[in-house]
Image 1 (tube, rainbow over the protein chains, first blue to last red):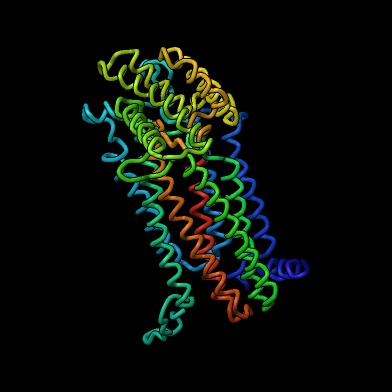
Image 2: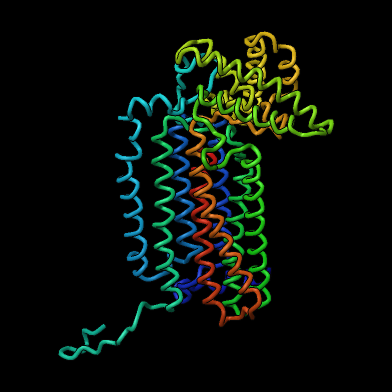
Length: 143
Length: 345
């Protein structure tokens, strides 16, 4: 791709003049990073993953946030934008986090004080050959 | 800036943000989209982690490698759209159009794979339905009763026919054997709520129809790929035990369970019996809502790409490609979170 090498040189040498662009080289580096990170989060699913499920979740979420930042900063050019970017992204992010936190007492902890009837008909973690209840699943969170 | 001009500031009137109106509104739209998807994903997280049980990917026929391939396709399409933008900025209309076409094709592949995945869920009866879905949270008396009613309906429909084909005759025989067994299980379970024989029979009935993922708890250490096969093996074993449980029908039932490692619903597709997946209903609701809204966004992006393809994509169109590109990157962004949350947790 002759065009891409031109563009890489052109923008790469003078990043401040072309501050609205990322270079083709940057895009390719981001693409490779995204692929590697996808592989990394897929790795938690493989039998070789050495840590517990909880570590796997934390790891996957960290990987996802990293991927999201890469896409936002470089593909969406937010790295090169003026300060208006904070006006849009910071409140939206905070509202998203608050939303999840506000749902925790009513929805997330709904089974803590469930009625007798609800407990009777709720799902049991695993269907087993033994009578229900004898073999409570060690990991209610599953995979 | 204005410090040189003491007294009378020579401020330049800035009518808006230092960018085009289109881009401003695309970003405003995206910030509402962030909150829209944050609400969906956040609710999913809270529902999922507060749930008493959640199905493993294998129980709901979710394939992690397919999800990973779809992730790769969307990332690749994000690169092609950004290359299309660079092409337009360099005033190379042909190049821009080529990359835009590539993005359109990749997005279409994503949707096709998604449709294939949906089909796998639908064919196993995993979808929300009125008045209730085929999914039961646990094998209860109501479950056995529902199984019996479904089998009664099948046999009644087949018996009512004047002439039956060979296949239909076989269906009738299978359904009759199963109906006798289901009625026996229901009778056992109805004796009292907590009698062990009844609970055992109910669990075995559920295992026969659709084996649950027994390997789920140890899937991380033991390798997730094999858990469905392990589960199938145990399911078949459970089925044989169930045959002993119901005297009188042993021979016929054993024969039916031959080769039904994936459950009777899988061996006889026309059965469509109720299945037991703990947490399966909530899973189906959240899965179809999240992936459905994401797929709609992909579809809207594809329509926009198709419209753009009819234009001359030179430097004058670069702002438009940038806006649609911003939207497309956001769709990619949502999938980046959906993939681990839905497939890998």
